[in-house]
Image (cartoon, rainbow, N blue to C red; front, top):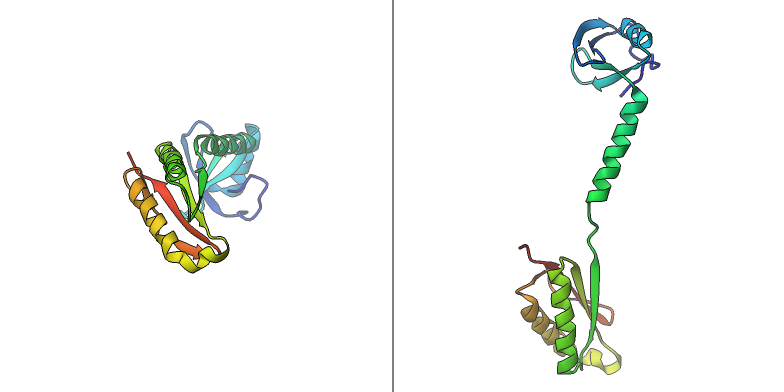
Length: 168
């Protein structure tokens, strides 16, 4: 996008569109700048790839303001995905397990991503198979509201898996 003070197009022909959207025609760049200055506006590049390049007489400051406003509006309407985490242990009690899976259901129903972390302590690392069984049970219990984002991964002393909410 160029403004009327850009001299890279000096001496070249441009297709000019007036401030009201009417076609002025193919004119020299300098003539377009003169017409823009006469109306107190700028020459702004619309399409550089076409032959000849298409320029428009408009207020460049107003254009930049509207572009910033549009970008700000788009950011306002986009929602950042929240990731909720639930931590488990290998020797978790059935009541505690039920309570935590209940919370997992709520998070997934509210369209939050979910990360389940199963922590091993001390000699529990010798019984990793019990941890994988517990994670498989969690996957089975959450299959109606969430989709696992892969397989459980053992990262250090933690066994992790993440879930995405199921589409409605």
